[in-house]
Amino acid sequence: MEDRDSKGRFKKGNSLGGQSTGRPKKNYSIPDILKRIGEEEGTVSGKSKLDVIMYKVYQFALEGKPWAVQFIADRTEGKAKEFKEVINKTEPIQVMVIDDSMDSK
Image (cartoon, rainbow, N blue to C red):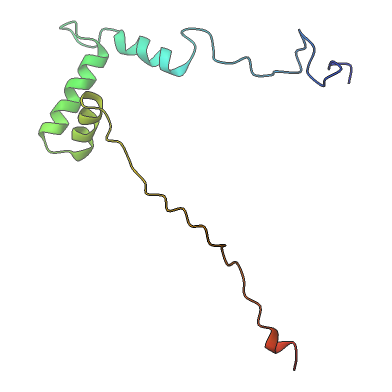
């Protein structure tokens, strides 16, 4: 246990303690890469790839595709909040009933 201090924590500078170093550096995470690709020119008219995709989503919505309508609504109006009713009962939960009458025979 020479890698740890007296409280059991990894000592500073120990490479064994945290194999994961957290979020990748800027431009190496998947969202960063996707954003960068989306900003690239996608058509001859100079629109970005992201613009081209969003126009296509609108086209699908106008054709009546429910997923496209939902996609646009979620991003323009915000997702609808989901509510769940929780009933808090104070009586004990019955897990199993054992019939004693069988043992006495």
